[in-house]
Each structure stands twice: as C-alpha cells, then as structure tokens.
Image 1 (tube, one colour):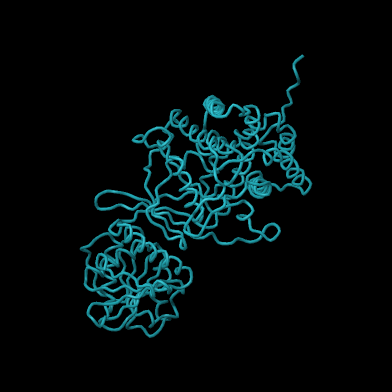
Image 2 (cartoon, rainbow, N blue to C red):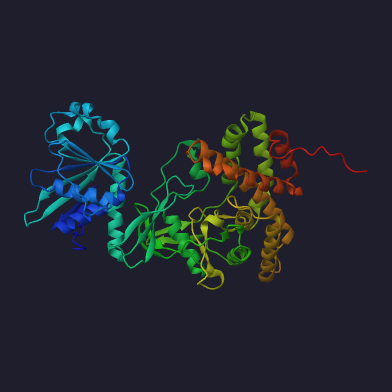
Length: 524
C-alpha cells in the first residue's frame, strides 16, 4: 500500500478500470485529491453505490479539494437536490438524485445551464441517467469484506483516455517517489495534443509531467497519407525519449527522464527551470552565442540515425525529405494566403510555387545531413547559469527531430519567430557558427552554408506564416498573429540571396504585400 492507496494488481492494470482500496478516511481524502487534480470545467463525475457505500463522504472530500478549502462545510444535498460551491477554477455542482423520478425533473432546475461550465458531482445518477451526458467519470463505491471501501473508477467516451492517463500517472509517481507531489498546470504551447504540468513536492523540489498521448491519425491529404506522416511529425512519445537520450549522451542538457509510461504518453522529467535565453530587451547575446555553440557541437559530431527508445523499440530518425519540406511550405497557400491575404492562389500559381521550391530544395536534399531538432529557438531553450559550458543551455521540445540540413536549426535560432533577432546579432552569430565549424572541419564550406541558411530560413519562414495563420483560424489561438510582421521581415531578408532569385520573383508577383516589387530605376 502506498500513502493509504492500494497498488493496482496486474489484473486491474489489464482492464479499463482503476480499482482502489480505501482502508480509512485518509485514503478517501487522498483519492479525492488525486481525482480533483484531473478535473476541469464541464466535467461530470457520477458516484454510484448503495446506501452507506460512502458516496457523500467522497463527494465532500472532492468538493473540498476542488475548492482548496479542507474545512469547507459540505452538507448532503439529499433534500435540496443540488448545491453549488465556488471552486478554485470553476463552480462545483453537487447533486443527489435519490428523490428524482427521472431526468425530466432536471429541466425545471435549469440543470444544463447550471452545469455547463462547472465540475459536477452526482450521487444516485441512475435515477436520472437519461438526462446526463455520456462523457463522464464514474466512481462506484462498495464496502470491502475486510473493512473500509473499494472504489472502482471507470469512464465513458472521451473521458476514458484521461482515466487511463491518471492511472498511469499514479503508477509513475509511486514508482519514482513523487506520489506526494502537487500537480500545477503550465501555459500551453503551439501543440494541440501535448501539454505540461509542474509537480511540486512538499520539500519544494520540482519535476515536469509531459503529457503527450499518441497523435491521432488525421485525414489523408496526399496519396492516402495524413499531413503528420508526410511532414515527419512524431506520432508517439518514443521519439522524444530516443532523442532525449541521444542528446544527453553527447553531454547536452536535455531533461533527465525519471519515469515513463510510453503507451499512454506520460513522462516524468527533470525540471530544467524557467530562465529564458531572452530578456525584456530581446535576445541575450551571451546566451544566444552559447546556443549557437551547441549547434556547432551537434553538427560537428558523427551521429547515429537510429536511437533506442525502450527495450525492444528503436527509433529511426526520419529524413527531412523533399515531400516533407514541400508540404510545409504549402501551408502558406493553404492557410496564410486565404486567411491573412484574403484570396486564393490559382492552380497555375500554386503549381509554379511548388516547382520553384522543388528546384531550390534539390541542393538541400543532396547535401550532408545531421540531426535537425526543428524547434531550436527561444521558447524551447532554458538558461542554467549553475552549469558550465554548453550544459548551460537546456533543450526541450525535440520529438520531431529529422535528418536534415544543419542550416535549418541555425536559422530557427537566429530568425526566432517569437522574438526579434537584430540583423547585426544574427550576422555576428552566423560568423561565430562558421568560424567554429571551420575549426573542427577544415573542409567546411562557408559559402555553401550561407546559401543553405538563406534557403532554409526562407522555407521555415514560409512554413511558419502558414502555421500561425492555422493556429488562429483552426485552433482559436489568435495571439500568434502578432508575430507575422517579424516573420515576414525574415522572409524578405532571406529572399534577397541570389540563390532564391526566381523564387523571390514568384513572391513579388503573387504576394506583393510580402515582397514589394522594387520599381526604383537603376542609378546612372
């Protein structure tokens, strides 16, 4: 038994249930705190069981945990039918349906309006089950033969993956010594499937919970394959684990993995802190220089293409091939042009766009490759002054790593989508990268790198314009639009390179807002 909660048996683990023995009141309160940390506005929890099974006791503990008040007075709503409390994140509705004859009686109580944005707890749900939504967590309570109670947690519809993750989470923290930690949500990123929480022990020690369930298979967009497959985006958390261990083996500061449940996509990882590589004035030159040196170290090392993720499971780093690079730049046509510019490209204009990009990217595909982390920029870099050398740069968010041009990550860092990198700092750090690569490899071709940098910077800027437009229109995240002018500036700067002359002409013709045509007559 761990902290008053019985461990799950192997048989229980094989089922879509979580069976927990509650030997005493303290164990009931602990289960309530565990469940409360998972609940969010709009959730429904039904409490089943006969008279004396402990439904009201558990409901009271849940309400106190949700309200953050262990002394809150919580009377039984048997006679009032429904009681509403102020929770720390949303209202809490506690209902008892014992006296109801059917769900139709809830209409007069304004049930739907009352519970829409609340966490709702219902005792005796079977008395009005026809009025309750299908998506829910059910906790069935029964008296254990040996004393105490047994709680059986099950879920329906979309709540089931959450229950399985909660069960897996408890298994991880119990194995790793973090069972007494409190879960605290963290701000989300651009991902629609991945999230993070900070775990805080009573001692103040912290770790991060990475929640990265298997990526759902999207609709086919080309030759029967979904976008994520074509773009080489990680489909499971195995990719993160493999690349993480690869980076750490090189002496770089990727987070240590304390515990994992790869099937559900949960990782308990080291908290590298929250000190960024930027400040109120923008990039901190010293920190950006050290991040640049991290890339020099990475790109100057002979790296494996296959990495172990788990026992019996290897992860092959996929190639950043022409198909992937092209489908990314086409996001400009799919999302940015119609949503931001307000029109559609003709079929011929789009075909010309793809053909020009295919020609430009041909030399990138033919060049030597390295690990391309793809998101090596300020939101994913953490400054750790207590460490030394390259280890001062903490690296996160690399699960989509591919085998691609070394110029991509350099452009990702020095043309940061979320913070303006002054042109003079960008040029200085490109020079730093080139000089130090040359020290390690006398055959390093500086001119070829500068050409690749312009091409990959253009590819990345084109892609991100489409991604940020999509985040606004499809995902309801309009705050990404404020970054568009910065990315447009990077794009125009990159297209000035002679290697991109024909592609620049396309942007001038079809997107003059981005690349205005220079009508200034040549000087005599």
